Image 1 (cartoon, rainbow, N blue to C red):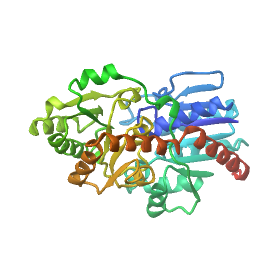
Image 2 (image 1 turned 60 degrees about the vertical axis):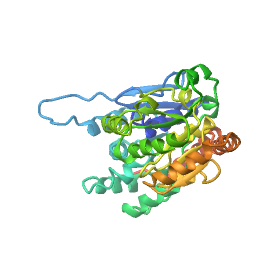
Image 3 (image 1 turned 120 degrees about the horizontal axis):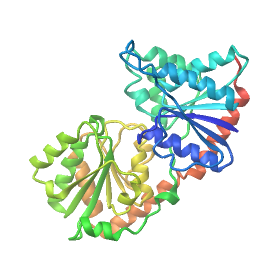
Image 4 (image 1 turned 90 degrees about the vertical axis):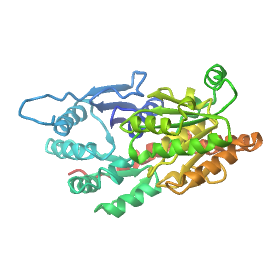
Length: 378
């Protein structure tokens, strides 16, 4: 099968999932064509059946904003036509789904039929997509897609609640390459940052308000009062300066390490004892899954699709959004006893196995075949 994958090239969840999916599909014998404005960050190798098509955006004085969607549409028409693709799989509704729908309509005038699958990842529905200026386009794009998937039941429900679509949405969860995230011995790294045997707590995100990184600092401050520990903050973003100031206010600078954007993150997760995810909303919680694959239990909020991943009392704990006292209490419970910590670590890895890439990618393959079979030419 010849598959076109349209995604953002950044380290964000949708780009990571799309890239890892494409690589896995290529390993299973499919021809995979990535289409984006830059080579995806996780596209770290090429084989004979992985291809990359860059979308070049021209800059003209006439435009205050580069017309990326129009340029992407033209590029999709070109790639579909000349590479003879069987399917377009677009990740993140805005603007990929609308560009793909327009490309499909243009190709139809040339006698070429291309089925489209749109995968919803979260903020394209729960945040950006709810903007009244986007809603009509998102709804139309969903209705014109030949297939729609969402990464969690919670995101599926949000889509039906906020958009005018009656299309069937298939839930295919995010996945993990367990072999890549298998726990590695990084004792030298752990000893360097926790020389006195402190517990290591980790948070990774893009440091936006919705991630509630301030809550991470508040929870850690409470943990540190009871248990010697250090906090590793992985990522960067608009809230970085506020978080630094909060650490100074709590006098915990010496115990908080800002590591910035890191890839591969598994080398950091492999030395961690606990992962904090207090997000206001998460469609799935991919970073938590990555932690669990490294045998790291998770204390998280109970927002969005997180409860579909993190099992309360087994792989970690779920708490109400903003309840830093409860999160700290659960974290201290896990960390205060080596036997309890070991049990949670084992359970976290066991839960991650449910989302093994070898179990999830075949679901996409079967869905591709179903959509191609049932799609109707314009």
